Amino acid sequence: TFTCGDFSPDGQEGRDPEGSSSSLDNGEYNERGQWNSKVEFFLSVAGEIIGLGNVWRFPYLCYKNGGGAFFVPYVIFFVCCGIPVFFLETALGQFTSEGGITCWRKVCPLFEGIGYATQVIEAHLNVYYVVILAWAIFYLFNCFTTELPWAGCGHYWNTENATNITNPNATSPVIEFWERRVLKISDGIEHMGGVRWELAMCLALAWFICYFCIWKGPKSTGKVVYVTATFPYVMLLVLLIRGVTLPGAFDGIKFYLYPDISRLSDPQVWVDAGTQIFFSYAICLGCLTALGSYNAYDNNCYRDCIMLCCLNSGTSFLAGFAIFSVLGFMAYEQNVPIEAVAESGPGLAFIAYPKAVTMMPLAPLWACLFFMMLIFLGLDSQFVCVESLVTAVVDMYPETFRRGYRRELLILGMSVVSFFIGLIMCTEGGMYVFQLFDAYAASGMCLLFVAIFESICIGWVYGSDRFYMNIEDMIGYKPVFFIKWCWMILTPGICAIFLFFLIKYKPLKYNNVYTYPDWGYGIGWFMAMSSMVCIPLGMIWMIWKTPGTFSEVKTRAKLTTPSKDLKMRGKHAALSPYAANDAKLKADGKISTISEKETHF
Image (cartoon, rainbow, N blue to C red; front, side, top):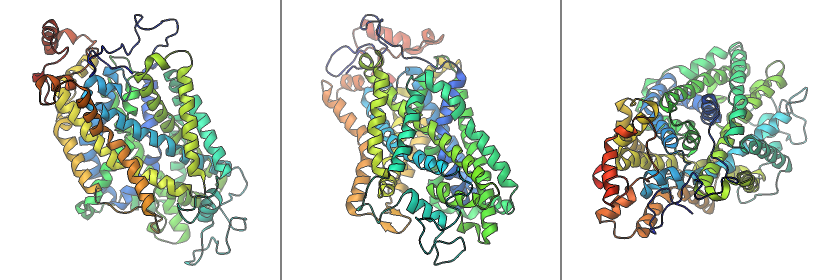
């Protein structure tokens, strides 16, 4: 392995991560690459952050937590956590031109574990997020009929209790299609059963598409996102227009937005707002750093981040109208309150909305449009996640993977391994495993934990003033002062408070009925800890490898000193107040970049 910079704990000189002619054969070496245009970067990030959560999670949280009143905590966390961390990760990637691990190694070797933590979460996401695509593809294939298979009874998977009529003792055919036809769900995680070959084929198709979307890096990804990032908006607009013209749509929208100020006194409302920000903005996953690393050095990432964050939240707000107008129609048709039909997550995508379209004219058409929207929303989020992990590995070992077709083979290997692990979730008990991944492996607790250390590293150890100077060198001016205070105080403080609330453990249940065995919860907590433990273990490992003791000033300085390769490349570089001091330190033969005085550690 190589270290990004002149310092490595074993005393060896770090290799050039960009692969200079002195260390690599230029005839065989592949350049790292950049986006062909600013639009490609913008659409790639938009495709990553605007995903299924915007459609199936935000509208439900808004309705559940006081309607319009929910926007109060949402906007607060949007400003204090969402934009600052989003901008931090994107700017860090652009400044360092490194992936999710080596960027932290270059900035501060002591906090390199942050990078490993983000990529472990990413690896978990790569395995289970694509399963949702497999479900959506399965539903899409079943839409090409004159009558939707979940619209009525009489199929081989239906029970005698299946009926379209509201009856407390009856089972909806939509639920039976989901549980008995798609999942063929077992009684619990103790009974995994066999692999559902139809779902396995859909999973393979999803991975096949993902592979060819990113196999050439930014060159292929940048072209694909022109379709995958824009098509969902067309579908969302069509579904919105259709939804608001249905009877009962206004009642659904009223339930979605009607403010209940009293809900703001409930801490859970604030926790839901914060976790939604972290989930929907794809922060603390390393994706934004990887995508930003392919930017030109002088790209105005600050303006891009503000626009992308507003676009993301605006899409969530718009999706609420499309979803709740249809749910209002569904409640109107069944003559039941909106609470009886409102769902979140897979329950909305694969039960509530499919049931609603069966009540519309041309039901197969609207079902096709809905599931195509889900597939495109999930597809670009999935392949950007894979691209992020690949970028991190390639940047760690450029001499190995930037030659010939090794990068493509690495993507193929990751896809195949993730596919076979994902087959576990295509079994009859796979839904129980999926819930464990969703609730633990990429939980809000993991993301908040990482966000705290990211803010501390940049705000206090590397130095917010230094990072602001780096940003000014890239974009030509400094961002608003408020973001600096967020990195130093507000973001880590708010995340720590969130973490306290989330630690109040409630055992996971499937459908609020099935309780997992103890070993099931053990697996879940193991997946959650597998990412969080990377940060303290990384610190311990770096301290142990570094000569001297941590109490010594020189040792601490080595652990918190940025790489000598980490230089400002714009017109402000020579004007930096750090430049003269860096030159003096180098001339004195001391630490190669910054002094102990210039860090907050």
